[in-house]
Amino acid sequence: MNICFIASECDPFVKVGGLGDVVYSLAKELVGLGHHVNIILPYYKSIKASNLEYVSQKTINLGGVYYDYHIYKTYLNSVEVYFIDQKTFFGREYVYGTPKGPYEDNYLRFAFFSLASLDLLSNVCRLPDVIHIHDWHTALVSVYKDLYFKHLDQTATVLTIHNIAFQGIFPNHILPQIGIPWELFNPEDLEFYNQVNYLKGGIVHSDVITTVSKTHAKEIQTNMGFGLEGILREKRYVFGILNGIDTDVWNPATDKSLYQNYDTSNFKEGKKYNKAYIKELFGLETPKERPLAVFIARLTRQKGLDLIDDAIDDAVKIGYDFIFLGSGDYYYQGKVLDMVKKNMGHVAARIEYNDVLSRKLYGGADVFLMPSEYEPCGIGQMIAMRYGAVPIVHKTGGLADTVIDYNEDKEQATGFSFEEYTYKDLLYAFARTMIVYQRSDEWDKLILNDMNSDFSWRKSVQEYIKIYKTAKLLRMH
Ligand code: ADP
Image (cartoon, rainbow, N blue to C red):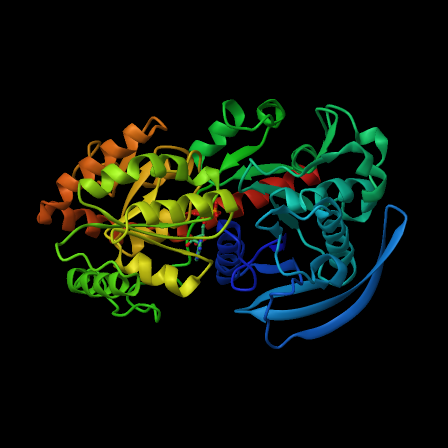
């Protein structure tokens, strides 16, 4: 098949969160199975791409304004990647906004990108069987396609919702600027409480909707759709497909960032070595052996920092050390730094995005902390398990689908999960984890179960192929 991904992130060019991981690793997997995939991305200022080939200059009319842009192309392991270079929109320091908040013209930046991508794929690329769009940033692709690209009628659209909390909701007066007629501003379409909702438009106009775990597919149609439950229930084709991780990129046996590589045969020595180094790096030289819990995520409310803040003093008392690595909201940066101040010597943090450091932390951690309030899939916990860091998670979305709790099934267990989103439940999970940590045979078994878990794309890529075929069939009839 011929598939075109249109997305706002793609590792290693640009990654803010899990979306970046998924776009590239899924594309690579599809190419490995013989499919043709191209990816269209905005050419952000931060992107460093080698062997760029200049394709052409183009102009589009968006809401009566003409915008010029340039197209570049490169290859990444046989995946064809196109960049849309429009300096006013994408020549900025950040991807979505500064730590103070999102860029005010995001509605225009991503409307432009969606329209320009359709223009690019109709004129420059091979016409795809399926266009696969991701999150609100590219949701308008389906809307513009129905409005202005009738020659793409046979091309199906699949929309994957990676994080339904972000929907791209803007005041309705922007409609003329983004070239969308007022007829579409109704409750069956883009209208949402008298505002314009990009994701809702994408849901209505796409052939098939997917989200990133089976549990989350149910959640978004019942209690966690952030207002879109009804429209999603009306959709016939809503599926949950668990994300995979690229097991070549995330491999403790070969990861060059680690102080010492290890696999299932020597993880005890390997992890011990890495732990000692990162503790030194972060100034956590506690003399007694204590489990090291690591948190690596965007610093936002979603990631459970309020619970951690309430539980951390007691967790330190019962014997944990902590390292935080994250960037994001000022409010949560402050919270993390306060936790460090209050627990000097046992809690340390770096407020930054740092891939190399994250790898060292996955390698040296005993415990990986991910008590997210909600989590569509979660990549962090899968990477952690592959690196033998035992996860403590809130039982929600993809965390519920990937972590087997110790109390549920001791033989198969891969971590610890808690049901109620309260700090007491988190603290109880810390306590349960500590008991098993002290029984070294049982702990090692947990680590082995983690490292032996299969989080590759092997299964999920087949499910995507089935969905692409379904979407294509729907278009043909
Ligand atoms: P989300 O998509 O909500 O951000 P995921 O768990 O799905 O969360 O994906 C997060 C990805 O981003 C993981 O690969 C994680 O390692 C990475 N990541 C998050 N914060 C940082 C950071 N500060 N430094 C390095 N990597 C990070």
